[in-house]
Length: 317
Image 1 (cartoon, rainbow, N blue to C red):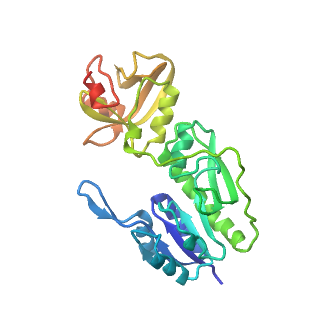
Image 2: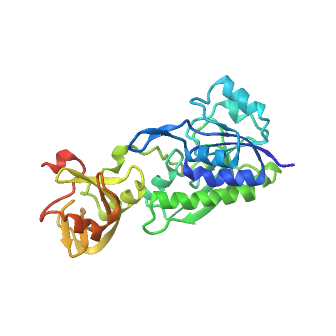
Image 3: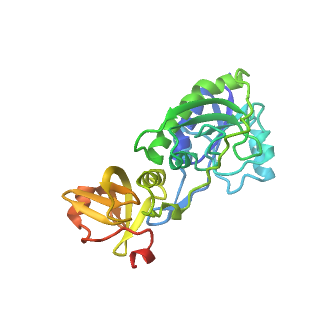
């Protein structure tokens, strides 16, 4: 008999695990965040997990709150063997944590106890970690503090952004759900307490975290740009107009002309850091689309001596 699974998740990174759960068990309920306004028209858009649940024909629920007796009763009434949680975006109450015999299993995109919180992938890149991975863990009432069932490590690629690394970890997480969750259900993966040392926090990013202060070492700026891509995006202002830097790379040995100072050499554009320069490889002007630097410069190259600044006030100095 297939296990009865309740799935809680919202973003695109949770969809591969939902599909894996649907292959291995009977998904008796899917919970996702409510539709939110998105895009230029600000029309309500369903989360990717909600779209996938509808495509798969699974029972979908999008409550505004989960910490209510009604939702706890709804989940309990589904009689799940296990509850699978992947980036749901809400703290679960004890009544839901206890609603399944095999507990709430979380697919977390870091090697716990490192990077507990809502943005583990971005913080792994920001910290300059050489590797990260996926942890299958049993949720408790703390913030990613529950016992670990299994971990798989992967190297962080040179130049890899949060979006790219998240896609890789989402695929790995789905593989582990399909191959290892049945072992947990059979009692073959004894939960192990997380080690007491090495815990770090990975709080959710804010829009302002994408502002690039160019008076930092180039390696640090490279990590920042990769960590905030695709959201909130690395940005600065040139002549009062917002630029988004989608991709850049440090140029060891190429002197900086000054923090944020831009230099155009043929089809190449560099910006100065504290120590050396970074080449800007993919850019976007506000209101336009992402493009290569060569295409970007063909539209309008910055004036000699122009600089990219972290805010409009700095841009006007």
